[in-house]
Image (cartoon, rainbow, N blue to C red; front, side, top):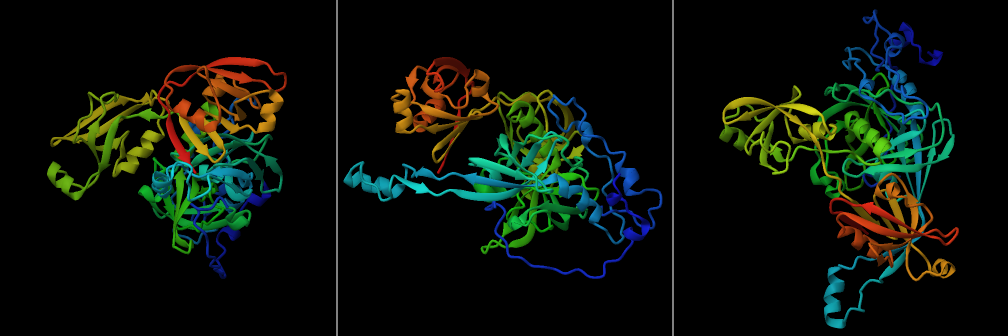
Length: 531
């Protein structure tokens, strides 16, 4: 271990002579893209070096294989802190090299106004379809945003928030030692607000993946990131709450899975995607959001995605390009005082089942009005507890559900099934993103050069159905299910109504050759038109 990480007894017990507090007004993190060494004199049998030398090595696969954090990566170190004066320098030195600065650039583009503007519709009813209050299109200038990320594997996979890189045309990653890289977007999970990037390098510094489940309210944590472009900033706080559900206040209700770690460590615009670490420098969460006043200043409430969810999502995106989710197949709500009285519960805790889907793996095991109280011996106090456990599970996992039914306790075992894949379509200004592919409209000059009357450019291709089918970056998609593709709006409509296999026609601009490929879309697509 490096000398910089060694602490003697004199260093550990040194007392704070004074702490200067700087108050900085901040923009909301949600809007921005922009161990203690717990070793005191009384702890004579352990020290940071002997504890950390026993931590598991996360990189256990061969170099050519996908490197990911496995189940055994979770630390078994106890997070409890003795009531002594803390020294945070150890965790800060461990964490800062693995936290990166992310710069996102969006190119200048032509933005289309939505066609369902109520005022436009009102006036068109009177003056005809050609009348519009607002121009149909306008030019949006190039923009830059900033955020943070955490190096997840030694070969360059990086975890950040989806909202940091959403809509990015170019992504640049800068390490703590000022090395800079162009990053590729591997995959995103808007439901949890996570994304994975890839830079090309080896032997990069990473963080041991700590156990967010073992965190307790009152435990010390550090937030590491780049607020306001102030690189490598560290702030301290405690765990204020766990399994926090912010409801529809987060991202206009886009986040479907919420089970946040709440902390009072100061985080602001630019901290998005940065690390929340425990007192041993272990990653226990990804900083994601804050509550802010109308002036967008920090109000003392920060929220991080727990490492249990980070691990599941990151590993799936690296291995599959999408998140492999499971289906429990129930609609649920928190237990209220009225429900507890009606059902004869002794405590106002647990999750109430409103309904069970017919195609659920639990259709014959769970019933309406059941109250789930534990899963795999973990107490379920509210819906976000159950949500986190299911979101962290893999297809084929067996879970033991303890429930309360009609005055009696009962335990059942369920084998979780994979949730059917849903093709997600997102149209952002002049780009269409679907199944790992990014499509752009092509200009008149390109069409004339290739002697085409229609088609869309395959701007980028990542893991997904299109890549599996054989689509190539830089080629022109000219037909979909034997129908001409005029533009990305028409392509989005075609994909939206598609269910099953279709034939795609593609032109390679390098030689003018035409290629035909088949792709199976399976279940019906969901369409998100973001203007």
